[in-house]
Image (cartoon, rainbow, N blue to C red):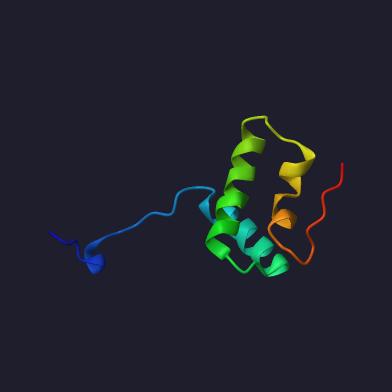
Length: 74
């Protein structure tokens, strides 16, 4: 049975707006061709950073998927 949206009160989880704002900023800056794939890599990088697996390539993960600015610096 479908739930009508007009009778449903949705609450935005704390921090969700900030996460989407960060993704939006990076998408607008890099203009990727495949936004869903870009978003997946963006969130993967955030998870790695949160788990302590942060490194320089994680920091620049957005540049790896934008052929116009793809640069790997070690």
